[in-house]
Image (cartoon, rainbow, N blue to C red; front, top):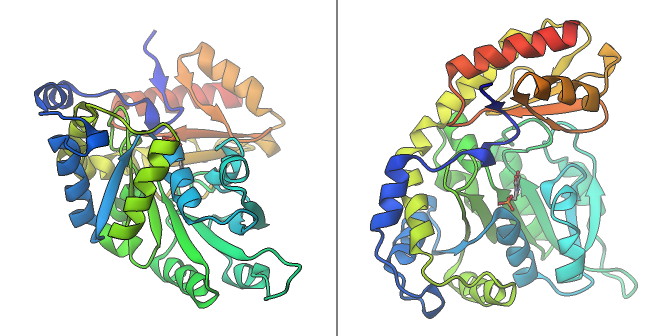
Length: 344
Ligand SMILES: Cc1ncc(COP(=O)(O)O)c(C=O)c1O
C-alpha cells in the first residue's frame, strides 16, 4: 500500500541531489569554528535574513530554547499565545531550563492580540516578575499555518522594546510566510532580538535550524548551544543539506501551498467538518470534526488503515501537512480516502 504521509513537513527525506551535496561537503570541527560548510551556511543565512550573524543548531526546539536561555533571567516572564509551539511541544523547557514563567493570552486565529499583550506586561513593582521576553510564532502551526501580518509582527516587537523586554520569533516556518506573501525573508525577522528558523520542515533538510541575531547575541547563544549539548563536530555534512535546501527548495514551497488548497477544495463540503482557517494560507490543513460526531482518534485510525497518515490536534481536530514528498496524485488519493472515511 502506498502511504500518503501528511503527519508533518518534518517527514521529508533528503533527495539524491541533497545527499550528493552532503557527501561532497568539506568539513572541519564546528566546536573549534573551523567547519567551512557550517561557516558557509551561517554566512548565507545572515545575508539572506539581513542580520549580523547566525548559528546552526540541531533542532527548532534548540533554536527556540537556546535563544530564550540566552536572553533569560530566572523568574522573568515570557509572554506567549496559548497555542504556541514553545508552550505545547517543547517539554516545558522554558521553565525547566531557563526558569521562565509563562504568561498566556488567547489567540485562536494565531494572530497576536496586541491589546492583550500590552495588558499582560507587568508594571514596575518589587512583588512582580519582570516581563522579559515576548515570543511570536510565524507561520502559526496550531492555528493552521496562518501568516501573522507584518504590521502585527512589527507592533509586537515595538511593544516589547517599549517595555524593556526582548522579542523572539519562532520562525520555524518563516520560509512559508515569505513564499505565501512574496515578502522577503529579511522583512519578516527585522527588529527581533532573536529568531529561530528551521531547515528540516518544508525546506526538506534532514536536520537543522538556525538562530539569527546580532553578532554579540550569537556569540552568547553559541555558548548556550554548547551547554545544551548541541556543539557538533563535522556538522558540515548536515549544513550542506541546509545550503542545498535554501538554493533548491525554498522556491518550491509554493507548490506545497497549492497542494494544501487542493486538499482543502476536495474535502470542505464533507458534512460535519470545517477547516481552520479556510482556505489554508500555507501548507497546513487543520480539520475540525466536532459537528461530525466523530473523534480524532477514530478518524486517524480509519485513515491510517487506508494508508493516509495525519496527526491529532485535539479530541476532535486533526492536521494534514503538505510537503515535498507528497505529490498531486498523493493529494488526490488522500482526498478520496478522507471523503470515504468521513462520510461512512
Ligand atoms: C512552530 C514550530 N516551532 C518549533 C518547532 C520545533 O522544531 P523541532 O521539531 O526541530 O525541534 C516546530 C516543530 O514542528 C514547530 O512547528
